Image (cartoon, rainbow over all chains, first blue to last red; front, side):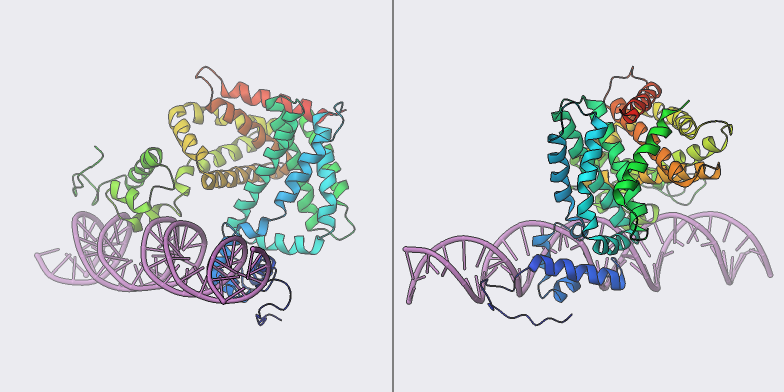
Amino acid sequence: MSTTVITYNRGMSRWEPNARSRLEQAALDLYRERGFDQTTVAEIAQRAGLTERTFFRYFVDKREMLFWGQEILRELYMRTIAAMPGSAAPIDMVAAALEASVPVFNDRREIVRQRQAVIAANPGLQERELLKRAALASAMSDALRQRGVPDPIASLTANVGVLAFTTAFVRWVNAPDEYDLSQLIREALDQLKVITAGT
Amino acid sequence: MSTTVITYNRGMSRWEPNARSRLEQAALDLYRERGFDQTTVAEIAQRAGLTERTFFRYFVDKREMLFWGQEILRELYMRTIAAMPGSAAPIDMVAAALEASVPVFNDRREIVRQRQAVIAANPGLQERELLKRAALASAMSDALRQRGVPDPIASLTANVGVLAFTTAFVRWVNAPDEYDLSQLIREALDQLKVITAGT
DNA sequence: TATAGTGATGACAGTGACTGACATCTACTG
DNA sequence: CAGTAGATGTCAGTCACTGTCATCACTATA
């Protein structure tokens, strides 16, 4: 199973299909077996039955492959915010967007956990994750601005949302299965309200 | 000036002093002249009258050199929070810590601006900056926990502080000299209060 | 004053991520 | 059956970063 024999044209395509997902699977396996830094791109490619060069045709760099879903979240956030009633407060638009993304995580809880364990073990990957989070916040900022929310507010609201989500997500990943991500998000948002209310 | 002749033992030390700051200066100059990616470590070292190997004895990697002051801020934040009266709300402890760091930036406004321009032009450097911000938030979380603030609140409060500071900082860097960083921080915190207050 | 450190640096040979240029291979198309 | 296109392979190269050992100027100690 791990040493798949590569044959050609068993079906309708010229090469063994799913090169991308084969690379993803090989990489995740190797990262979990021996760690991110101890895995070379050549090894990943070999396990996937491809070459190093092909790896870099699918992924801009070695870290990027762990952060696919990001684009899905991005679009989901933007669509959800764009579809909110104009009467909603900015923070409620953001909350709705976060809420809309919950199924994406619930549907892949186990994979998400494995991925997060790999990231937690490597500072370089944490760096990349922060960049991805910032990109999501930026996307939500844009969506809010398109809804007429002025600039410092749009950015702050989006980042507050990402902060609440991240806090909830970390708890959810490390919690038993019964924990509900939606509820954890709402809790985080409530706590943020209390925190900033101040004296 | 840029092609300093290196001589030995003009004073009390065996080698030309300030190797570290010479490397920092050379790097910043080159990054500004031709960009971060277009500058090799060998070039930086050469301009500083040293070798590539020595560069990596002073800095763990090529990006790290732009993020010195971080340690200063870290200690300042932790000391300030530790010295706050126990009656203060967590968010006020954080606000005080941020406020205490303002002179650090005011005293080096021009250098900070140059540095920030370099970072803004390079995604890899932005990634590193996000990591540094996260580290500062983590430090403030720790400080709050030591003051008895429980866990989700400590982390959220610290991150709200960092968010407010970052927002203020971005505006301050791109604003005329008259703008006051302290005031921008207070504004951001006020806006966060309004945002999370909700419906 | 000879001798043995000591600490910063240089020299050098790696490894591994990433890139550019070009060749190849298979399936489809006419 | 020739031609094309898209995915892949090959290969050479750059550059960040590391391990190891040599060197060099001074310093402490006998």
